[in-house]
Image (tube, rainbow, N blue to C red):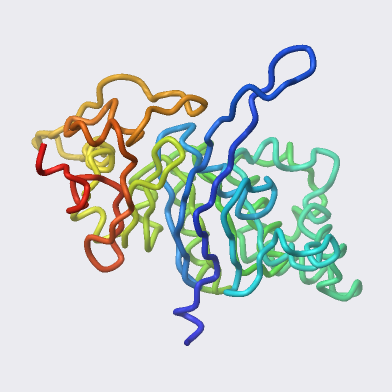
Length: 334
């Protein structure tokens, strides 16, 4: 198997439940089903976009994959043989440089007490990736790759704009020479003009360093630009997954169709065929029975209210969790 066809990350039936505690003694009275039975794989050198409404579990997936949040069940496999939850503390520390994250807010994710050169070089020194006498030149090289200048090494984060701070966050991540980076809405806090610069930077760095990304966002136009594959989340579940061209040309799940119909078209003469979803998102601590989307779905039938849909591969590489596409669900007979 060639390097380009190997899966850097493989997620199998990942679940993450957060306990709900109440009373004087903090007794567990329920769970928030943040992520439920999510499966996907990301090939080396590619980008997977993860989209969905706020609160659907996108960020939780990213943090759980990196073992920043402990999973409830399921498997996360790196480089086809490494499961992070099976590693000892020492082994985890050695593996940590290979998996990095770029956080959403560039203002709160940088220490205000450290100059930029130290922020980027701190973890490199800690893990001994570069000899001490070469560290300064290495940090300079990484900064230049991210569009920063050597003279900015001694400046502090408050002296930079939002876009420059996000470049610092990106430089801090790639300085460890990772295989995989979770990009957790890295441009949502930035101006639109700066967003394009950061997206282009991420693409250039991916080609230069052969990086693999999980790109989390709710901006479909950004995801369409940067992604190779796309997964659509709803209330903790992956409802659809396919290559970018396939999913935009042929969205199958009713929720995906509604999401894509909301993408603005920069042409005032084009009439939008918006699909308006009625009702509110159900509570993740008390999700509806059957298909979680049935309370807002225009195609809902009896089986949708009673039975959770299976994830079907309706076309090679195109997966969807909906009774409409399952010949054994009984949907067509109602």
